[in-house]
Image 1 (spheres, rainbow, N blue to C red):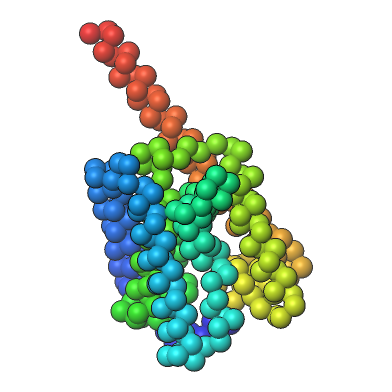
Image 2 (image 1 turned 90 degrees about the horizontal axis):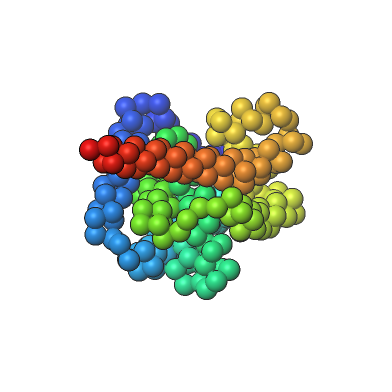
Length: 253
């Protein structure tokens, strides 16, 4: 279970945390929209090291300050995959690059925003001014921003067949984590237990302990992909209709 010191979820601090994080994402996207065309690769390279250094800080803080076990905070949770994905997207070639980009778009946006809306492992444990809470806010805001950034200037275009690359990347980590969980009674990616996270506890109680790993794995694979892809297609439909209407109005003048 999570080592809960405090619980600031569903309080005014929760609202402040979420609003500040969303403002940070929006401002970052606006600035990139205005000044970032052609700078996607450079941005990925910078963020790959920033995310890695931030993750190392988090792990060292847990070990040396909170005296936690490394196995509890190793970078083998769903959101942690953005670290590997950013390196793949920044420095990889061909297939590796595509794998990284797919996860950042289909996994990074949804998981980042979902965490910022319900920061269970941040405000559910520490106050808003705690270093690990600030780390969580900046990290997950960055995950969401990186995914959106790849779409802003059409650096990547989304296709339904991307599910192959996305599932290959995320699914490989899930299989590896599941093996570790079974062999060493760990809980990487929360594939074995909900670990005190309310939405996951609801799922666990609903489907039972035997089906829980299957549902949580499918949720992290299929749900995140189709939510992102569905929103992307909807935005494209709306934009195309606006463009068509504008063109028709210009012709009628």
